[in-house]
Image (tube, rainbow, N blue to C red):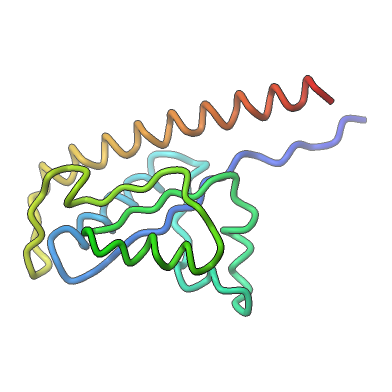
Length: 139
């Protein structure tokens, strides 16, 4: 009997800061989680070894980091946990959005940005799937 293969999983780590770009990061991550069944938001502090949910990052085939701004807090936290993301998006730099304080953001711009990130992650998934298939053939 053939062993059940583990599905490809992608962990999402995102900002949720009190700025337009921080809130856009959160909304983009939520849209990504809803749109792609293999991509899931995971608790950022869970990257640290003493926290049990760390397994979500450790077991993922790839990590996507969505920072709100060029401070790159999420990326730096992921690195502290010993991980390297396959994709790193910084809402301000990647999409040319000026960071402003507060919770309000342009929803149209956020949706356009989310669509671009979803496409990036779809492409990543296809690469991971192809690699997995090639690895299976080599065995």
